[in-house]
Image 1 (tube, rainbow, N blue to C red):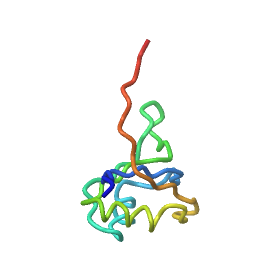
Image 2 (cartoon, rainbow, N blue to C red):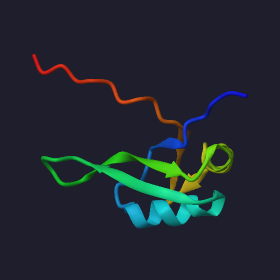
Image 3 (cartoon, rainbow, N blue to C red):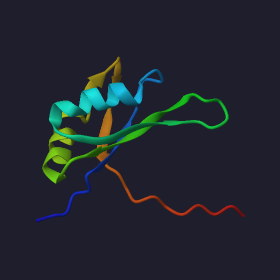
Length: 91
């Protein structure tokens, strides 16, 4: 069995989407542990993507099937397994 992360990347979000709306949407596919829309530090505006952590692998797979390439608030979402965060180099 392939190990699927329970953390999902959600891209192409409408800039008005909130953490609560993301939680509400993804709770249709299972337990949402956390849902975060990424906010730009300088402008305070959404960057148009976020992360949702699902309760288990099955729920994460179901969420990808349910929401990838589906429209939400007028935008077609990109939903896939989140890649591990890469260390940043500040040189």
